[in-house]
Image (tube, rainbow, N blue to C red; front, side, top):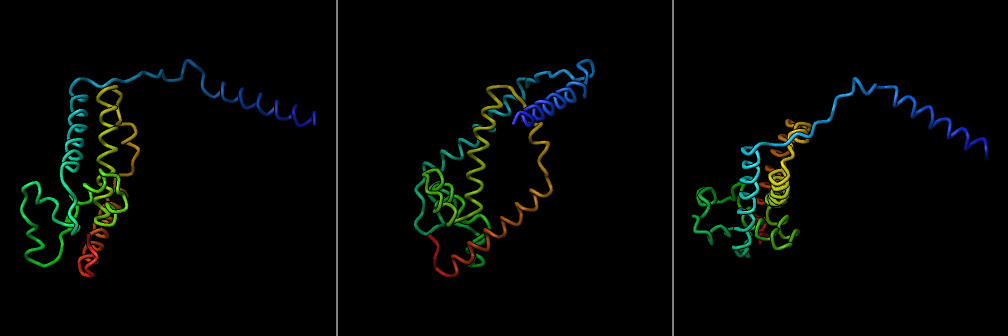
Length: 177
């Protein structure tokens, strides 16, 4: 038992020496806390308020029982793509999905329009993240710079068309709403 403890202690000592000798303090870059300027903080606050406005608009409307057409409560016209082709467009059901999302009915939101569910969630996340950036002045570009842009773009496009196919399936089977 004693041998194992001394071996573990020896490994820890070797590791700590290796870590301290890896980079001398003279060569280590100093960590400078970067703060954003007024313009960047104002931009972050405007992004936050825009997301909040979208989510508050979703609170103001009542979700349609048909799973489509909730935007009519905002005074917007009926979907021209649906009128012309008889099929829902790729964004049909987004307002209804947002309206269900802000009410905490996540299953309903995802069922009516899965891409709308994702966008509503991203709107909420963006609201809080940009509010944090605006109030703290801490930049988010390091985190955002690490995201793989092209894979995310491809996945987003695939998810959009998959959600559109789901919406067409629901409308064709009369299961919408």
